[in-house]
Image 1 (spheres, helix red, strand yellow):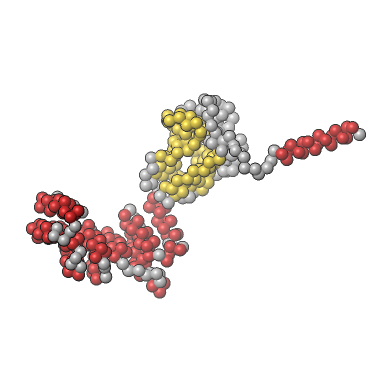
Image 2 (cartoon, one colour):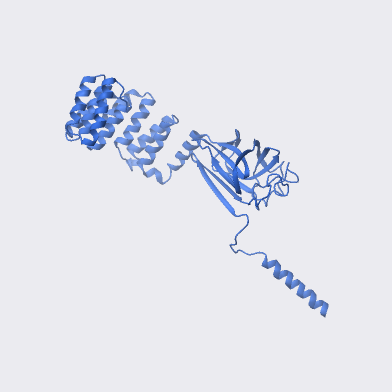
Length: 364
């Protein structure tokens, strides 16, 4: 009877302690979970990891903390679950292709060289069951560099450009960096096409901004022209049409880039005939000069100054148009007249412009 009681008691205690170890309480962790994200162009990069502390340890050389040479296993690049890194589009890692997706991130130290493993099996506890032969999509080798001391292991996004950045795993006084690159034009155009089919399809600004992005990056220009026309003319039945100097200006720049001369002249005429406030006329007059349409700019600025004779900046634009057409004397005469109407705080700059026009050094 006593033996039966003892056995029952032990089983109850084991059951109690087993259940006591597993719960959903939000408790502080020695290696807290971290999520870091960075956009590279339209590509979202997200890293999830658990961040251990150095605690005075020689972390990079202690095989009990970071296994060396993959013996007995690669390192999980953090604590607890394997670190994961996700890319919303295809990327290049150290020049090698990697498809969009979420990857388990593991590392094999080899002295000062580190083999980085991107595993399609991304939900492992640590690296204990990682099959390097079957689970790894991509492996690259990089060299470590010294870095400022970091007590907690973390990831940093460094040296970002339009289409590339460096991701650096930093811990103690060492950084393991690797380069990520994207095809900026390809990924952005694909993203724009997708987004313009959603709620943005009802906004002329979205179509115009998409066309402008392509124009400024000299890519996808024929489709960009279609987008500019959609901004101007609207969708089915003319829905959400909004013809204005901004999207007409985008179309003019695209037509010039595409050498569509006849349509360019028609669109310039259309834009010049559009109603404009004095401030809008100022902006469009400058636009015409910046894009080399000096004769158009002169005629437009002259007409708008007659319409808004109190707008001294339109007279300034008329003078600058004459400067770009090579009529320096007429330009100086116009600009000097501007000072009769312009507020005093602009006089110093106007005098500078006169000097620059006379010396042929003025630029917009």
